[in-house]
Image (cartoon, rainbow, N blue to C red; front, side):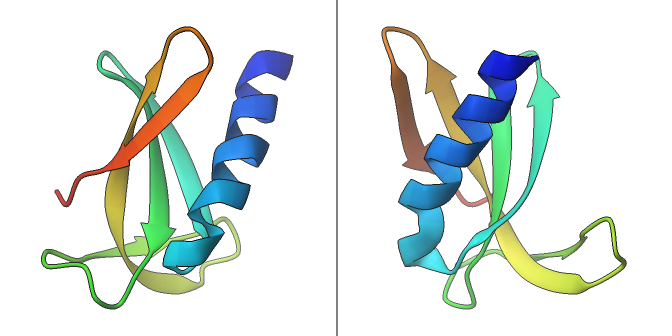
Length: 74
């Protein structure tokens, strides 16, 4: 669990330039981070644990030999 938390913190800092870290999901394709970005071509309305709403986009994350992230609107 610690590794996931570290990944979230690390990638959250990197994604700060696109509007900020909002949430995380874990799926078969890896860890998916949600970052708020008003300029994303396809936006979703996301809710954080406090019920705040964000327009955002999914950021696919590949975890191998360190953490590498690339944005992918979905």
